[in-house]
Image 1 (cartoon, rainbow over the protein chains, first blue to last red):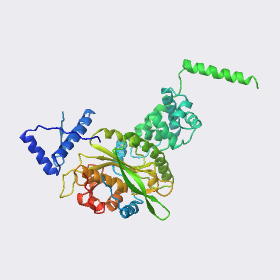
Image 2: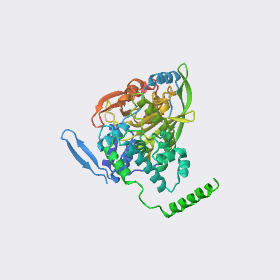
Image 3: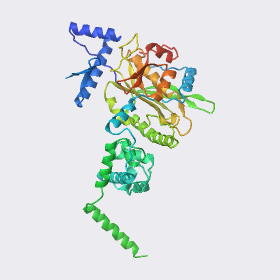
Image 4: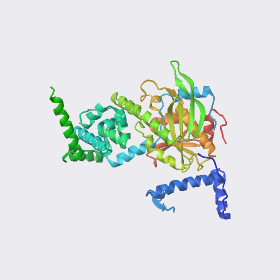
Length: 70
Length: 166
Length: 210
């Protein structure tokens, strides 16, 4: 893990609100939430590039819905 | 990051951990994937086909890398006599270390080479069928290449020359 | 890569004695692959001895760490290893995102998920050719997972799916709680170390790190 760099994020009020809610719900700092988001986005992106698909599954309804990440 | 420096804790944990297996479920995915591809039961490849397929596979893999037996034995750090025995389908059970080294140098999956060599059983019926087909089709039928022909003639000349003094 | 001085235990005639070791965080891929080479032969030979004796073979006996190292290209995964007396004694791969705790009151909060973990075959009863050499390898790796969890602001929470043979280590040595079989994961049991339990595992020390 290399040293860290700083960047400024320009977010809308709604985006900041969503970030703060996530931070509160997950008991993380906003930076940690953004870090998790980057990890997940990279992971999903790599697997989709390899041809896999990402689904949410409704266990009650026994349905799958595909989530596309561009 | 700071780790626990309490030695009494460490010794207690060592005592508790002794005799336990430290492992998680990732391995199960591999077994499951294998079971999806073939039967759950252990599958035996006919011994003669397996030995022949193993011999031809090692030989062809070596030749694709343009290595002599000696060069492969050096590169893989395995005994040349064992390698010859493998390629002549003359070995009942190669050394595990040899299989591991060959898998690395020939760039093939270690587990599959272990199954092909007979060191472990295969669970994969598709692999069994492919091995038998490979054994059947890999009998050398082609004419010698120009290099093989030249080498052969040189070797015959040495045999002839050295036999004159007998 | 980070190297942290620590200790394992080494077996003696009387039991165990502490021995200097190094915990490595973010183990270089070539070091992982070298460890695989060092482990693979004895792992295989040990498994063959067990099979010949009619004993159960540890379920992980033919893992190949070379097949795991590609994950380390992604930010989501990190590795840890523990080295002692010139040899790698244990390796672990963890996932930082995509798993969350299932236990109240922190249900839904992120945790460090142990994706793969293994002790060198000479430390595993049955695979070792003689009594296991070093102790507390698994303990130190789980401890490392707890510390990584603190670094990530996950409060020491750790989770994993356990093979049946490994359940005792996680329950008794680590103090993890089980959620029971997970139908989404081959019915293996989900084990979790809550924030509270992680402190108890570490002997009640406040090990939150910055």
